[in-house]
Each structure stands twice: as structure tokens, then as C-alpha cells.
Image (cartoon, rainbow, N blue to C red; front, top):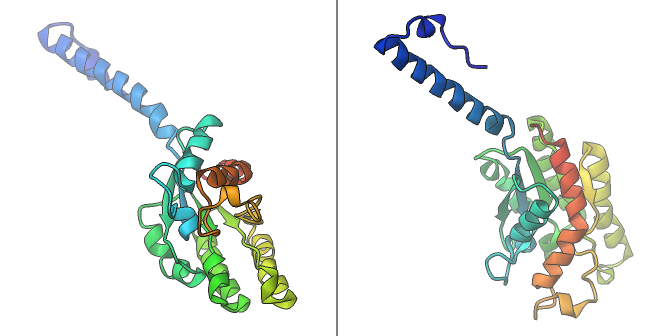
Length: 226
């Protein structure tokens, strides 16, 4: 709270009137800035690959801008989601650039990596180790995390699928992260929600993704430090 020195109020002559005006302006300024400072916008850093980056979509139709719009519609217009998606990125790439992604600060983090590990046939143990290291680093910073999972296709074989799919459930439980089990929930086998490559969502597909993950993002905001 701003305290006005008593000496500023001691005279009503020309000098006293000037001082009184300055003091009143200071009080008004403190009142205006105080609530804004107390309600600082939560900064959510979304670290991911092309699904986060908005590959193949016009500006404003990717995951981050659609999520921002969804949050505003849910009464969270002050929340800021920062797009740290890099097309083609793997869990190893996300691990390597974690500190850089957080350089401007964060109140919470979304990790949405693993799809490119699948496309490259990377061993699940390596993917697990990378994500575990990222979560451990975020734990050390005291940042809440929403871990977004991927699911391996059956053509990798049942053992690979079981080992890969378990990564996200296990790490979320170990680190106390919020889990969204599958980023492409509701899109598999729905060509009308995908771009021509059959891999990346179109704008309608992104909207479906946002509807599915949105409640968990609200939970993440609730865990973020004020």
C-alpha cells in the first residue's frame, strides 16, 4: 500500500496545494496499478512439434491461437499461451531447447512431444528419458505441467505400442503432472478433420483438439502461481 508522507498535507498555500495534487495523483496511480499487478496474466509456454506450431494452417487457425480464443470464451482472457512449437521436433529436441523456451519466463508449461519420435521409430526408452528429464527440470523450477500424450500405431507391434503408450501415464503419475492422454483424440480415422497429408489437423480438427484439451488447460491455470 502506498503511504503519503504527512508533510505533504501540511499546508494549503500555493506550495501545499501543489503537493496535495501530486499526492492525490500518486494515490490514484497506485489504485490503478495495484489490481493489475496483482492479477498478472498467467504465461503458459507450449513446447511441442508441428501440432503445436500450427503446421499448414493460416495464422490464427493453429492450436495456440484457437486455444487462446477458447480460454477467453471460458472467462480466461488474461491467459497467455506462448507458441514454442517447432515442426519436426522430437523429445530430444524439446529437451535440448527447454531452457531457451523458458528464457522469458513461464507460470506453467504444456509439453506436447512424441509424435516425431514415432515417425522416426525412436526407441520408447529414449523418448521416456527425454521427457523425464524435461519434467524433472520443470519440477525443480516449481512449474505445473500439462503432459500431452501420443499413441503408437499398431503397425509398430504390440510390444512397442505398449511400451510407448505407457510413457505418458507413468511420467505424469511420477511427476504429478496433469495428463491429456492423446493429443489427436477424436481425429484418427476422420479425414474431414485432417489436412491432405492425413497427419496434421485442419482448422476444424484443431478446434476438436482444443475442445478436448481445454478443461485440462483450465486445470493447469488453476495450478499456476498467481
